[in-house]
Image (tube, one colour):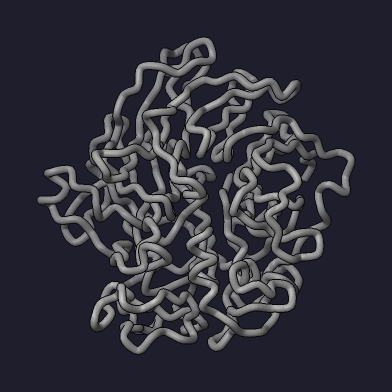
Length: 466
């Protein structure tokens, strides 16, 4: 966030953007206004703080043992929380082994339980993703643990040496109905902020030689499909004639992923507009970084900073698509000629060319003007029956979407950064995790950006009777 503030200090303009005004409704064509804040959840006496003092809780799951299982991104732990008492117990402490950058998006991240967990079949396994160091280089690994008496032990590597960075990790891990592991991996923030001079590899695909030597460096901006032993499934798609772990590609930061039956969906953070709700198809290309949202030439322009004439480092980064420096090569979305799959929805975060991304009456400080960009910053996506729930970090809101992406509604809101959700087995209580306080902002009660979170690093419980 500090790097974002530094970049935004270069921008100065006045306009009220749609993420700070407008109304909800249809968002299937990207033309409707952005969703607006719902009534604050703290206006309801039915809201309960189950637990607090968590260090950036990232993933939450209601386990078959009746406990809430939660990873702490910056706390480098996986903890179990009693939903009735809030009592916490540490199942796994990766301090000294996992790596987190202060205010970064790395650390102990997504996890999933084996489908037969708790069924007495000898499969009480937890699969987990975390960042670590190889020398002075950051990487990410997916591992398996065995659970016993509320503790995790016997770490087994599944896939190691994956790209790792303090930006754009994605890092959602799921079991598919086919028994394979699915993992979202972001573009690592390349071509953006502190890493703006690094080429974005979301469109790059590995060679057979790279796969043979386990060089996963081009797995950035992808959805992976993995055998439980870490090998490449024999029925994964061949892309450019090469079969790898890559199941789909062309993504920026897919912070949310879940299955509904056999159908796979993701929620993806847009760059400055165009958050995406995607239906993931085998071998499909989703266009990033050449396309953000729909291929419509609205607002987004791909500026390839790594190819700047005279050297990228000599040019200050500016995320505003309206004013790319002349040294930086640019392309319109319709210049992208590869086949691509469009999102089901951009939740109304698509705006017209010329949209002003500068300071506004609601966001008058250049260092926090990004809070009034037309994005909601999806934090996660979970599917419960017919409900697709997406959390918003900037808006502190849980949204319910239709599976075709044509409609959405706001369920709960508070002055918090909502990271993830899980549902009780009786479907009566929704549990929401919140980011910890720090450099991260959210819209306050009056819409202005604030770092004063109501419940930092907490688990909230709200009634769910939709």
